[in-house]
Length: 545
Image 1: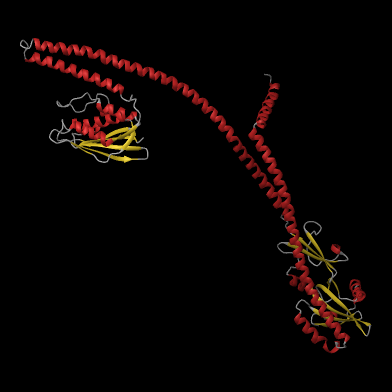
Image 2: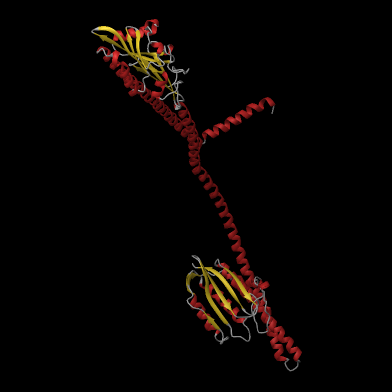
């Protein structure tokens, strides 16, 4: 492929993958869910934006209201003071009572720094005089601002405040003037001086007009923010969350501004969290929607695998059935074909012994005996092999089996051969199981215990339940026989393994192998524990039902 054609090919592959991804239903569901949640998030963000903005605006209004109340409280006290001083002048008491009355008024009103009487437009009296000496004789006409403020008070015939202004005695403050009329003629003004520091103290602010949350400014109404300002700050009161309040008592505007509005930050923060959460929920919903699809695919795959496995198992089962039938037939043929020559050998040797009994010496008779005995043992081995091949092929159904009855029947059988032997058992359970293999297991194990008992000690066998769970039960068959060495504890269950060869012991070594196969055929297990010359205990676990 030419290099110039590779890039379009890759783009087409990418587009195909994207289309397949979009066509996949869980992805579609996730995308739709995400956009729905995103729309809800944007709506909630807008609501939060409005609510937080309204809360912060309300907070500024409340702060403005508080400052306004504090200022008006101070100004109202001042208004009362100038009215009292006006009353003194109207009653001609200014010469005798001014100092004493002014002192008492200042003691009661800590937010006032000085009291003045202005006759015509010149300051006539001041209390306290200390620190205010320069004010005596000062003509208000000397300053256009003072003159305008005084004529405004005179025109409106009410207390009017001027400021903030530079005071004659030094510093800054505000002046409140009340016009006085004596005998219906203009006499002058009663005035109060409130220094800037006093006002700041009253409203709990510094000269910068700021605290942790707000910036403040007080300006004269006529000049607004373009005129002189009460606080020494450069805050821009044209942007942000601002409350502008008119103070009629001083003809001022009070500005309050929130320092760090958080409504936008909170809205953006919520939107970011909402987008992330929406994405997580969309992915989670995608997973939930995808699970049934995955499960369906998995079920289809497992179903296909099971169908293939069932076909394979059926094939194997048919093969196994065929092999088992062939083995059964083979075992039958072998046992039948082998038994016939053995019967002939035994028969002819017996006839030979009878016919030539007088001619044969003891050695010849012994040879004939060994040959006949070997043929008999060979026949027993063939019969045992046939029996072993049939183990586990029982056709009877499960039934209620009383273990006490089985042991009792076996016990009565061995009383003839072992009259001194004893079998101890009591309250053995009743199981729902196959009867024939259970009888064979107990028969062979009890027979084994009697067979390998000590010659000089009466055999004793104890049968009991040693363990039980919800589904299984474990039996123990204990004897006082000759015991088994540790190295042979596993080998005894192997076909034709005889560990004890005594002249009195008969058998081909197949009994325990049959027991093991029977126990395992009903989903059980068997093992043995033993000590030499002390005895053995055979344990086997089988299902209750």
